[in-house]
Image (cartoon, rainbow, N blue to C red; front, top):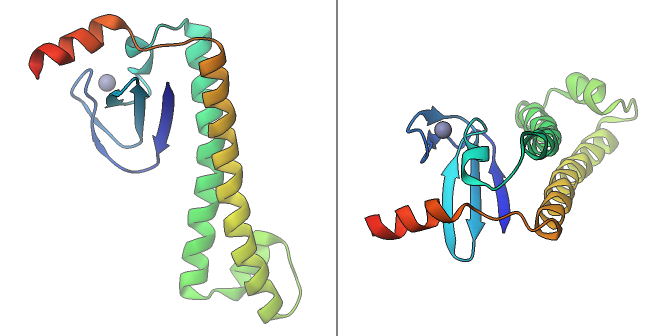
Length: 141
Ligand SMILES: [Zn+2]
């Protein structure tokens, strides 16, 4: 099973139908669905504590993606002072810009690493999508 997280993707929760900003895509044996953070527990065979853990990890990944997005925006408008503040690097402009692009990569890798660890834990603990949801979807198709 695997959970993917898409920041600001937008869409509709397949469980409750509400519109959602951040989307969780969950895949299990070729069966997949998307939902919001409110409904993720309904689909998975997990406790409230496990849900909290999953959301906490995803939030951490999200924070790195936030940083990446903010820095990207600063690079776009070439706001060198703000970039300096953001990465706390006071060197010359060329070095700071080069360093900023390295940070974009670092943020992305950190977010990815968190999600990989989370998915490994989910698989180790044997969490699966509830059978009733797999069956109800098969019937619709
Ligand atoms: Zn929902």
